[in-house]
Length: 195
Length: 195
DNA sequence: CACCGCATGTAACGTGTTACATGATTCA
DNA sequence: TGAATCATGTAACACGTTACATGCGGTG
Image (cartoon, rainbow over the protein chains, first blue to last red):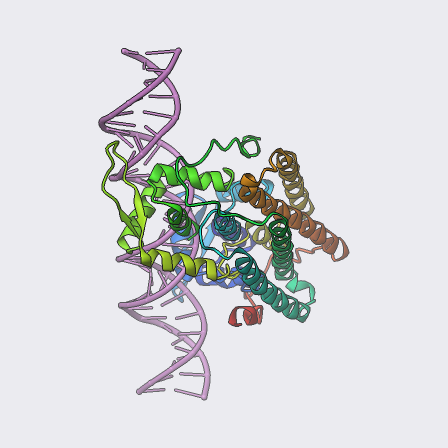
């Protein structure tokens, strides 16, 4: 959903065509998440279908700028007004991997943790190395993006350390090749989802 | 890609059929990421097509258990051996939202930050409230998942505070309705991607 | 009987990625 | 001339979500 709304946000600055939109998006995010040009056009098509943007007449040089409609403006405002739900986020692959490793035979869990930490620390160093390059105010957007990545990487490392410590205290026993039934009634975090 | 490999991991314990796989996955992750049953079957179909699983003959009660092949086992081992790349992760919607807010007219940025922090702190409280419920070792997998969510939420709050402070020092000026060209050659974080 | 839990699927849609095809302009 | 950049699109595919259809078995 982010790209949809990113396009709307960029079009609030001024009408733009597809190629411009891609450049503007990558400029704002510092190229952190490269954006395929094809997707811009398909997304623009859907946004037009939904009445959020409207194409302007083609320019003399063959460009098709798009204009933000009032409906699109409302949609954009709603986006900024609504916090991003944690429950709606994509699954955390590393958390899943570790959770499953605990109940999967023949997995060297400390090694899994160790490899992930090494990889994450390497990108963390890259981030901190690149970071001071820009401090001028117009680079501020992607500086904050970079900080977000930094904070997340740090959190992951802390989490990995935490897991390692826990597992050192309660070493995992893959008790046996399982026998009977699976999945004993979770009784779980459902309350979080309900709230 | 996580579900594909999760299924392979679960099948290493023992052959299972679709319905069982869903229950086992949600048991491991504590229901944090509910998994649609339909997707299990389509994914099983793709895994069979790729030679990673093989269906066993239907049981008397109409179940179709699947067996992990040796190719599937290799794929699974490769998954555990390879750290999750940060570059390949889904885009962080909140980071994008804030980055774009900085260059979008008529956005109350402090309010955006404030709302997000409130929402994230609420789920953080939920997590900490649910957490002590389970301490028995068989609940350990989803306890670690819960900790991952906790660490991430804390990191987001710290990041939001960080952004707020930065913006307080350098208040954003939406300088003017823009005029000429867009996207002045980023010269950005590309080095991170190259490495 | 009617409802619920188990169990297997299919269809439609949105989103994302990769790759390909096509032109216009610019510049060495 | 030939390559790079600008610019617009399409096709194929993977993945995820939601909803729907179907059948079996047990229980109130």
